[in-house]
Image 1 (tube, rainbow, N blue to C red):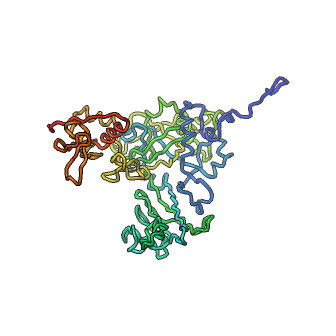
Image 2: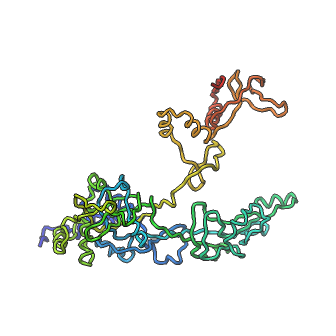
Image 3: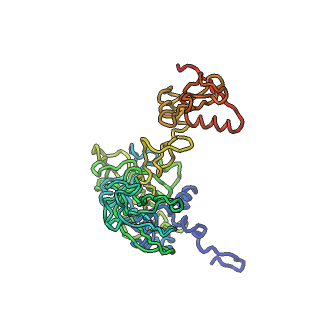
Length: 489
């Protein structure tokens, strides 16, 4: 009807202004735009069925959701891209209700729902071991290393591997345990040959599980690489049950971590005995303006009542009034309100509580992969300070702002403990006359100042190694910092 002789362009569908990922967001036109952007990023992090050949894949890391569900409220693009065949989340019964443990974007989950299998997933990690060839005819050997070998890790570390040097399938393994035993020839082998020295014994180069990881051996693949070297791939399977600190997100960009798992007996419930799976804090809604959260909730109830999925496609979804009509026909509030009873006290809430079914995604950010603590460990060679990062067993940075807190509280002894004694405390010797670093002369068995060339007035002082390094770097630039020494108070 609208096409005339003057028509030059025709809009096929307003949905086509979006990309594939943002078109998956239901009711996106009702949201503040940054929330749609957040969801476009998080949709790629959601756990689901990443590919069809899961049983044969040996990728470094991938996650598989145990019971993915088709969303009750979906966009038309879901069917086009096949998301209805390989979903990336589950339908949660969500109540908007304040709770001490869902403040600041945390979420409270029903522990009984998790025990029934809600949001469970499996993480697969693969380890690769290659038996390389070296000059002089030397090769790596896949075997159970001999206790006499250099670098032997102790009998416990090799307990899980068989005589062929490879761990057996379905064996339970934990951090530090060897999964493939390997021995290598000594490094710099050619030098020993030239000097006609007795070459040292082989060294252990076995591959063990990282300290923070554990699981079951899912499968082992023995093959060859392009250079005909023997190649062994071991895939570890770890069953992940949601725990405090795991990250979830709805398709409205409302992300949050689990703050508490509450037993079903303590969860609030409706007069009909409906217990929500998840409690989201009402303060997460107003400033973010994610109205799609409410709409999806209402549409979700209607979908559950009618037993059919509802269309939530941006711009062209089913009108809200039709959904409200369905709810009223079945005796539900058209606004998704329910009378709730507190599971702890047994008292009825004075206010109505908004509840509905929302499609939630479990993201791959899990606390088991991030949790880290350290009491003691490696230090850097240059600064003598603890190493950085979880993979290296590093320390936690006590930064400038943390330092300022202690300064503000006047906690001088604690400052000294954190920033000096437990970091990079060192004793250096300083000439009291000229203020430069002295050194120890082993022949004369005394400390000598390189400028005064006397060792009478040399004192030991306790400073941070990083400060000593700074002074020496200044000296290398031609700046001569002097240290003034006086009696310790």
